[in-house]
Image 1 (cartoon, rainbow, N blue to C red):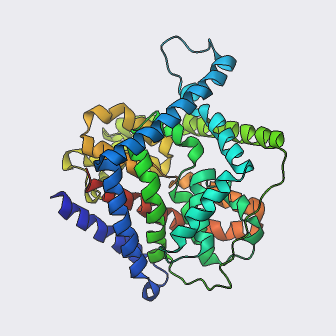
Image 2: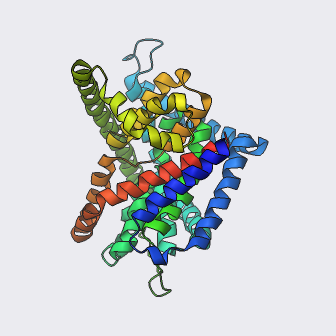
Length: 392
């Protein structure tokens, strides 16, 4: 049955992408098929083999160590604030972002990260039917973040045509920054995070190839990456503050969103006898079903999916972690993969603002296709969940 659901899910996702395509006759099917096969192989290796288990275990242990190191600095500054045995979300989940941000800065400063991004991007450009700039940007987004990535290509930003700009922004919204992966691992199973990181990269290219197909000539396909000249300690200070800003911003958004959802749920419950999240759960239930979620869980899963879309992935992951023991293991796996991306309404403003800060005209262009951007990035998350469903 799960194979039938998988095929139905693929057809629905591709159909939804096809409907939104701006050039249906120009869709390149060969790279789409190749990337789909690659993903099925990778998903199987990561979720159903000893090698995949060893790889994910090693990856999660690295982040466990990083979180322990981060705890040293956090305890020095905030030790004694929390009651013994409690786990304040801000201290244990958000503040470690500061330390991981510093590590990313160090890897960037010593040209290790740019080297990795460049060559992974080069390999991807050979299979995805897109240009070097698009491939670089997708990998860089997953490493440095959805807003910071545009700084690295700011020399080209003003000359990038609208169709290529859409692809760059779609990649930024479909992935997640490596600096917050550790925070995710405190809420959901690391194996689903690692799997989603890999699948979203390829699925971003697949959806873009359908929604926004185009060719890039050799003359256009020039990659100019900006490398900022900074001393080591200037870089440390900048990345420490960047990480802290991310932690503060995410914390502030959680306070606002969780409080707002609590209030709205209460009002809907008094008026209709159902919470707002239960109602939108029914709306998203068909989408959860084609992703392979068991029918008994589709309303609850739909509610978590919708929560992610209207708030952010942190709020949705908190909701999932609170009720995970009431759901099937299959549902938890599928929804966990769906949640690992920046595809939500607030990301439209974040990406448009980041681009506008570097080039006002291009920022306005991004704002105009913001909803289509979110539509495409959400399809990426759905497609990743569909692929994982056949492996669980």
